[in-house]
Length: 86
Image (cartoon, rainbow, N blue to C red):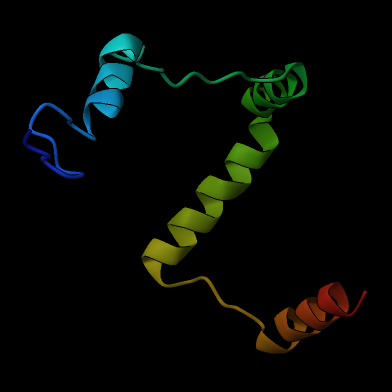
């Protein structure tokens, strides 16, 4: 009588794991999706009709391009300090 010990030739320790993988099969691929809330939609719509703001932005753009735009450093620093100190 021949005794082979713990390493039998017909025993595959990975067979159970391979069978589990075969049973599950390929996983369904998940796709990304985005949802925009009603509040965000209202904000987008309200921003389109603001012609006064557009005029101001265009004025600032042209001043910057022409080199006429001046920044008051003291008032900017004061506003920043007021904002961050609250």
